[in-house]
Image: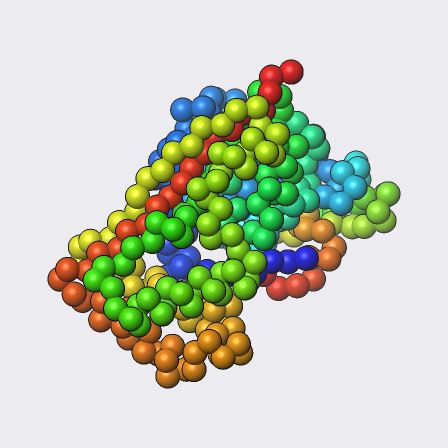
Length: 63
Length: 269
């Protein structure tokens, strides 16, 4: 994802603000990292450029 | 809670979902899109429609959301291959979208609501992320429009069994005819509805149709469910599959179904 997606991204559960942590960035795109919701104490992973914003109860199950 | 996607991700099913384009699947929404709009494609799957939308609204960004992260990896690969840059993807739940209120100018939900247990709840969430004056397009098939000719008792049995699986899995196979009402009930200020027929009536197309239908029959969410519930035994299910293949070879085979689409507008501020 590009950093400007942060303009609209919120926690899917509480709709609160997210804190972005970048682990790897390439060509202006965040390849890996995470989005942290302070209110829910929940971390949403960014893997292979795609943020996984599924609520925690849906994230662990296979698609 | 994760809901069951009855049609599944079989190879022929993915070929079919991946062949959808903005022109052939979202044509009813395109006249309402303008360059520089930010668009959400909710339930984007492998991203072929998403890419087309990006072409229409560029330099505006289209965000593709799907419940299956690995479908998004396919979508991203497709975007890379086609060199489309004004795209973003996120895995997400249609009932609990990861976007702030009024984030988008337009939303598309193509073949999404019919797979959900609670289409009205999803529509309310999609409305939440639309700005005042924003537009939504929804499109789904309605099972009431399904006609398979010439019919046989086994084909009827197949149809009934698949429908039963859809309902058991929490899908909404007859909601599409009510899309206009559902949009109004979800708080959209006005709505318009349309329909278009899908058809397969040539030897090549009836074979494709039969292959798709058989693939879906063999999905665990249908096949295993039918066995578990005692709706049919494996011999009977195989007989249905064989009947689909036999149907496809008939020179008079014809399949017809209905897509319903609707456009809704959020009240201007």
